[in-house]
Image (cartoon, rainbow, N blue to C red):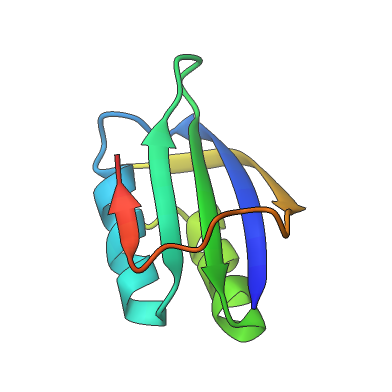
Length: 90
């Protein structure tokens, strides 16, 4: 089980980015949470099998939302992230 914190910058608010990210997470069996930040970025916590997390990160980098555009992604492994039963878009 891999647990990561992801920070995404670009055109990621107001374009369906969180909803699209949740759809990708559900498809890959990744659990966690995604939320908008005050600085215009989106942050998320994600838990899943290594291969699912790698695919999830790649899809986030490509912007799961057709109207979105990702300019920067930071990924940090964090074993202290709380496991959730599903992926939540806050």
